[in-house]
Each structure stands twice: as structure tokens, then as C-alpha cells.
Image (cartoon, rainbow, N blue to C red; front, side):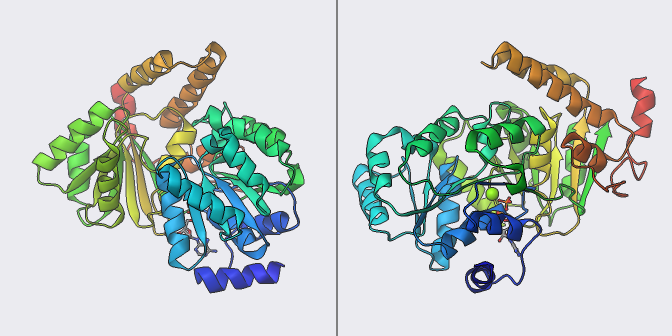
Length: 411
Ligand code: ADP
Ligand code: MG
């Protein structure tokens, strides 16, 4: 069956070989094992469930956290004549019913759904009539309350799936590798360690840099002006800062798009499309932007201020250089930003013990900004994936670049 998988890879995707971890994950699922694939952003997780879906008989159900993500995936699949669809709240009732009927008739290889679908008895009834090949949880960290994007509805899917009369293999995919989250996903979905595929988290082509003691606006201007032909993302901690930077860059004549959850759906879609299609080089955004976005030529990601934890940071910074070309990840650190992150934790509706956990993660994030050791190495340590990695040789600590001046300033 693995030969069929290779054939599918060539035929539908035009790729000649698997990326690290893909073959192992595909093999595991083709052998009907519940499987967990942990790969960095851009590592190629989609193929780990798409190829088995194409090789196996029946229909795969893919649980996905975002409507835009489902649209993109389905569009890409349809473009290569793979029968796939999504069923979610963006469709009116009759279109939903139409697609459900088609699903039951076996006319799709893949059906993308939001986790909330499982709360409707009608969907579950229809699902019982489908010949299921596999069930995939994309962005599976959403299942875990330890994950940085916990979605209760994601977790609620699990008991529904366990009640189905068919028990197809389940594959969970995530770029989040903290031990707690992995443990939680494996427990919930009954995944053995031998069917957990973890590929190296090191991103050799990313140049991490922590910058202290600069005026962030001046820094941004200089950086953008020297990278005018490059595509890049600027992450800010709040909608307000996103708007401010957007306006200030626009005033300076820079073509820029913005994205945050306070904008209308249409506005967000237009902004995202402009950035993805290279009509606009710079995207200023909150962490609402980017999940699952597949834009390969992002040359830099700048964190305008301290992010809340290493998981979010690495996922966001990791959107740079998905094509393997050397790219910059700059974090502008100012001690005052710590207060903002603490405030956001306090304001959240998390339970007390979860807040404590978030505080700890914030401390680890701050420690990243202060370490004098390799920054990539620090991240790998954080995820427990150091293995044979020594140092990257290109981050601001390895190059001894960027921090010195400020240490005296802070002192
Ligand atoms: P992830 O979900 O892990 O962030 P994606 O599945 O979106 O990553 O894949 C990222 C990019 O890598 C996509 O453009 C995809 O087409 C490409 N890709 C995936 N697998 C391969 C492969 N075996 N060879 C070449 N490119 C690949
Ligand atoms: Mg993905």
C-alpha cells in the first residue's frame, strides 16, 4: 500500500519524495493504527492524512478549527480533481443537506467539518451511513486544555467518535509538542507511543534574533525599508497595536494589510488574499492571523512585542521560510511588554490553575529573550526535542549580535 502512497504523491501532488515523518505517519494510518504526527509548521502534515484518504476506500472526515482553513484545503484538492468538500456554518441549510447526501453516497474522498458539526444529531445520523476511511484531527492541540488554542468543542468530538458503529483509524496532527499536550492527545484518542511520529523541530533556515533597547517603530521602519521586496508578517499583541502600526506604515507609503479578530469576515478575507497573492508585501496582525496559512515565501516574521509563550511564538515565527529559503525571525523585547501579557492572563476566563500554567509559560518566553545560548536550541529544549542539536550558528546569540548593548542599558 505504501507504493500506492508514493504513486499518489507523484500523481496528485507532483512531489517526488516524502518529507521527514510523512511516510512513517502514512504507513501507520494505512495499517489502521491511531496515529499522532507532530511536525513543525510547514512540515507537511496535510499529506499525512490526505494521502491515506486517497489510498483507502471510503470517505475521510477531517476536523478543522477554521472555516478559512477548510476552504483553502478543499479548493487546493478540487484543483487537482480530488473529490473533497466541507460542511460548515458558512453554507445554507439546503447546501449542507446536499453535501451530506453526496457524502452518504460516497462521492467525496475527504469531507472537512468543524467540530461543532458533531453536536447536531442529524450530522451524526448521516455519518453512520458513510463508509469511513479515517478521521483526522488537524491542529489537534485544540483538543487539549494545555494547548494554546484550546477549543472545548474540539474535545467534545471525541466521545461522539467513540460512539460510532464504525471505528476507522484516527490521525491527530499538530505542531505543538509540549509533553502535556502530547500526553493529553494520546490519552484521549488512544494513540500508542509507537504510533507517534515526531520529526525534528529545528528550522535550519530561520535566523532568530532578539532585539532589545530599540524604539520598535523606528526598528520596523528601517527593517521594512531595507526589505521592500520581501514578504513579511508583523505580529502585535493587541488589535489596537495592529491598527496603529497599520496606519503608521500606510502613512509612510508602505503597502500593508492588516488582520485581527475585530475586523469583519470580508475585510479579513480581502486582507489575507492580498497578502497570500503577493499584492501586499507586509501583513500586520494579531495572533488571529496565520493558522494553517500556506504561504511559502514569507521572508521575515517580526514580533513587535513579547508573545505569550514559546508555542505561539514558534508557530508564528515558523511561518517564515516555509520554502526552505533563509528567513529572519526578529523579536523586539521590552520589559514593559511583560506587564501586558500578565494583564491578558489576568483578564482571561481561565481557571486559576490554568492561569498559573500560563504564567509559567510566559516566564519561559521571557527567559528566551534573556538567554545567552543558541535561540533555536532553547526552543528545541523547551519542546524536549534537543537530540543531537548543538547550536544553529545563525541566531543573534550564536552570532553574538544584538544583545550586548542593552544588557548594560538594562543593568
Ligand atoms: P503543515 O500543515 O505541516 O503546516 P502543509 O501540509 O500545509 O504543512 O504543507 C506545507 C507545504 O509543504 C505545502 O506547500 C505542501 O505542498 C508542501 N509539501 C508537503 N509535503 C511535501 C513533499 N513531500 N514534497 C514537497 N513539498 C511538500
Ligand atoms: Mg496544517
